[in-house]
Amino acid sequence: MDWNQTSDNGSSRAVGRRPFDLEEARAILAATPATLDAWLRRLPAEWVHVRERADTWSPFEIVGHLIHGEKTDWMPRVRILLEHGEARAFDKFDRFAQATESAGRSLDDLLDEFARLRAGTIQSLVALDLQPADLDRRGRHPELGVVTLRQLLATWVAHDFDHLMQIARVMGSQLTDDVGPWRAYLRVISGKQG
Image (cartoon, rainbow, N blue to C red):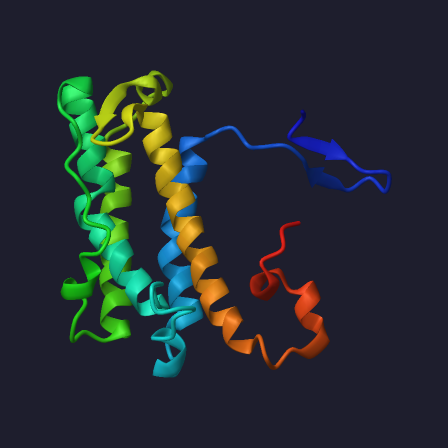
């Protein structure tokens, strides 16, 4: 399937899936802190501490999770993969560390820290001067087994999108009762695909 096709009216439309591109990945990763900042800074606390259910995360907790990942997951795993290949598994990642690490902090503080950390990890990624062949280098995930650098980097990007989508869903769900019959058309509330 071609990525770009021209429609009947001459405009381009995307179909299929994009192949992984390191430059695009870095651009997307670099944009995440500003996206979060634009969405969340200056919102009332009720919006940033709300959850869909008791067992889900609030936008505040999601930002804390992204910070923890920036410190202990993505670039540390890239370095382990490049230095040790499959011989050493990645360190396990604590998906819930934000519960203690973010305690007592403000959302503004978390947003500032995430922006600073992400800028640093992007600089570190650029400094590696990765070449196309490097993307096929292999490492070992402690649960998933053998993975490639391409898969790790693509997962980092998808992980950002996953949590941006989660934040939109958490905040959108706050309006479920107020949108009336439009609920059926709002994927952020109804959960419908498409």
